[in-house]
Amino acid sequence: MELRTDPVVTTLDMSKSEDIRDGKSLEDDDYESLPPTASLVTHMTAGAVAGILEHTLMYPVDSVKTRMQSLQPDPKAQYRGVYEALCRIVRTEGLMRPLRGLNVTMLGAGPAHALYFACYERMKRSLSDIIQNGGNSHIANGLAGSLATVLHDAVMNPAEVVKQRMQMYNSPYRGLLDCVRTVRRTEGLAAFYRSYSTQLTMNIPFQAVHFITYELMQEQLNPRRQYHPGSHILSGAAAGAVSAAVTTPLDVCKTLLNTQENVVLSSVNVSGHLSGMANAFRTVYRLGGPSAFFKGVQARIIYQMPSTAIAWSVYEFFKYFLTKQQMAREGGAGPT
Image 1 (tube, rainbow, N blue to C red):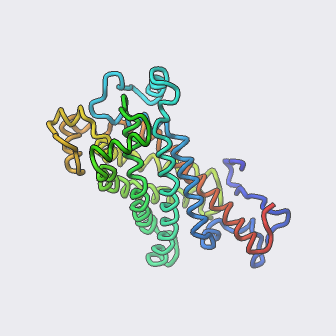
Image 2: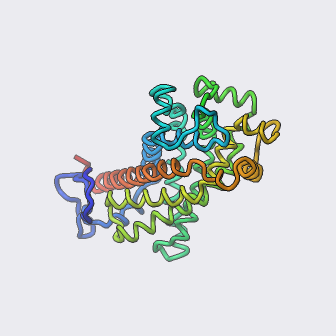
Image 3: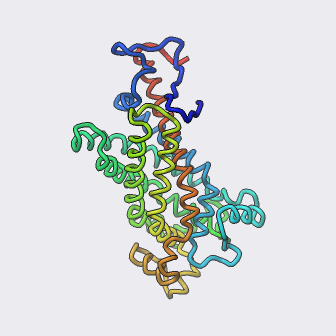
């Protein structure tokens, strides 16, 4: 696939001859005319691939973000910036240390993003029909993204808990299974969903802003809604940056609930485990004031911009590719 910066639409040569439908070639169909024929399996497959690639390619930056959001980090884990943090982690802890916890993230990201994109596509279409007679509705986009988030986080939250505990400096866990067993034995199964309400409180506005920004950018950069990689990348990057910046305070609280930092809890005389968004907010403010809510904001934006761009560009590509394959099969011509 060739990425172009000019407005020429990228197409895939699926067969040596063009399929003709309703008097026009398949290559000439507007991209927005393809999704209604796409199956649920197509949306889920494209979403799963996009989610796994998004989290895999940007995982080292995510590890840095988690550490930089620590409210009382170890002196050896205090970093000035993302690049400096990555270099020091690799130099002092080993080349593979920034990838610790990637396995559980991949296990969660596939099914979580499959549900996420499939739900979004279905709900966006249904709500747009109700709100704007099938036209593009920003309200429908925001609501669809919010509803999709509920399903996504239900699958992803346990993986997030394990992932963030393994990312922390001097993490005591030997690996994925050791972390799962230890958390279950010492804190119970509820620990894997302790931050779920906080995650939703953060991700629902995040995804609402994310989808509204993406669709708004598409209106400006790709008004015909054709398959155009450049517009998907730019729209995804913008959506990731805006939504990441405005929801960083909620992400700091979520990280605290997921990691249950012992030093932090001891310093504020919390016995047992910290739970609830209100308690997390009070603890963050008590320890660092207003500025503490934006710890790691640079790393969060640096992570979200390319990861969201990757997710959308990969998703749109696979949705386009799989849909054209399906239409070609239905027309009696398989792909070359």
